[in-house]
Image (cartoon, rainbow, N blue to C red; front, side, top):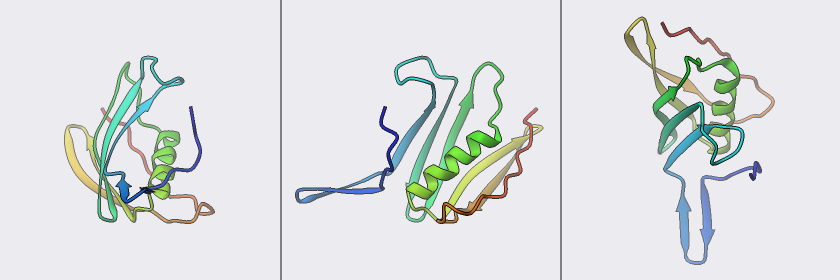
Amino acid sequence: MNTNEITRYTRIGEWVFEVKMVRALKVQNYGDPYTSCASMTINGSDLYIDSQMTRDGDDFNRKDFLTFYKFCQQMEVQHACYDKIKNGDRSPRKIEIIQSSQVKPVVQLGKVS
């Protein structure tokens, strides 16, 4: 599988193709059963994580967060928006995406009960 840098816009001939919707799978090899999935949409300078599910009780961890953060940097979005659910309560979150690969984001993840 290709893990090179990706871009949000690609020109082919007279057409410009724009990434607007993404499905992410947590899996070793594409086509194998995956352990987590997420759906995302990009609108303007914001990326929205519309859904994120795991199976077998796996939690969305710091390494997962950093992977999504890097994807947001590659898509050149300014903010990532998602809902955090803790103890059955939903709270919307919006984090700033810094475009420098030198900067490590501040991560605060809570365990979902």
